[in-house]
Image (cartoon, rainbow, N blue to C red; front, top):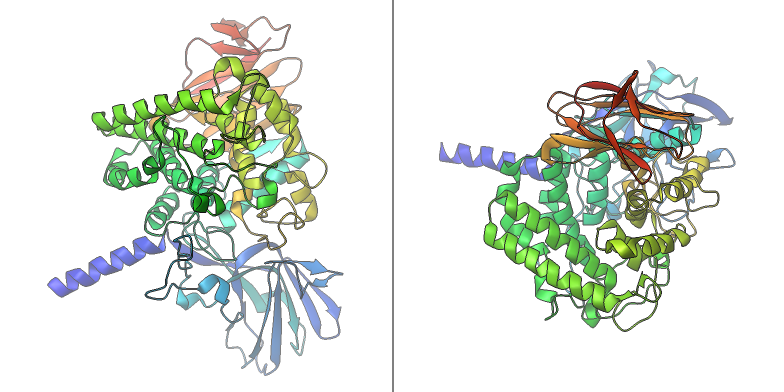
Length: 595
């Protein structure tokens, strides 16, 4: 009996380590095109992680080669694509009607397992093992197109299926977004699908190159997973994986605090939080704090540790010093969130300690890193250089004093998209939250090669690791940290954001920009929030909230508007700046109009 219990426990632990359930889904081809004698190009419409199952006709005996690809060149699969863009091939021999799974050999880059006794690098780091997909599946890789050579007869759609890997929990109907601008709709579709397609490993991984979870990638995935599906387990499993398999960047440690706090806000589940709290303390970077509360960096940490942004060309000229403004912004935000979590669990002494540390360090942050003459934050102590990053992160994290916010916001906006797809999450959050929503809208759909407009017009079906190949020549074309609009559109364009843990309260604060209308479905643990608004001579909002959720409503106020109405009845509201703020929260279904 003891042996049986141990075996069952091991099986449970193995399932937990493998992440949320995933399965293979049969997908039929969209088109089949003869592109050369004996060669058929099969298009599945979108990239997915999977392999190919062939079901030949009776009597088939041919030797068939399948070429898998993410990219086309001159109408054919690109067989020498750039960077980590995928191409692979495999050959099988047909044996009558017997179904065959076709896939290339395993790739050493994304199946590497850390051998026992592997020594850390010169900075003390060991790259964690790749997350493996089930052996029973065979090899999976990301591809959209397959070229079939040597079929020996007519290749029909019924002869092949892509076996695509997705989370078993994924529900295509869980979320939606539509607006008056087709470009926004295409961006939403791209980013939402990017989250779905990258659930293939059961935990959030960094695309296909290494198939390793990284903390910042995981947090951005989590934010978008919450707004595109109802699942909460994959984020939790990824967090647990990362606590046992940490990666190296300084700011990535703080992202684990972000992940736990996001779970708490989304679910209100203290039972999941409680057993993880003690270990989470190790991610606070307290050992790096000096007397004034700011954290410092050693030469080794400056060389490999303090990241600021990735790739290195996306740092807006950031100057690294032993006291790094970006690293300290993350440190301060981590302290504030940990104090919040400590209060949830009634660890009062910890809560007081973290809050006191945050106050002390914040005062030093402002005194030593802010330049009042220019109204901006320097990159660090000992340099006068002020990058977008040294300002966007303090702005996003609520560290900028109210009096300084207009100048910091203006500086951040003036730099445009001077950051990577990773930091763009925080950049756009900061702009939406601090009165620069029009700039945020413009950056999302900007011309040139540093926007989501560029991504969708490139034809990609999963977001990229970088804005363009020229900014990161080895980039993956299947990297969900580039999918920020999947959460930005519901949270800011529709305006639905969680306000209290477990979605007992939310805010409804739409940022329409130049859009004439938008509607959508935002999943919450209590049920979906349905939102529709029209922005014309008046602003009209229609909303349906699930049972148990109340919402504070803040509506755009045109200069000539005189109030908020429900039908012909005036609703009590106060005008604050460019918003009408309802005095009472709403429940259920409501129709409101600013006139």
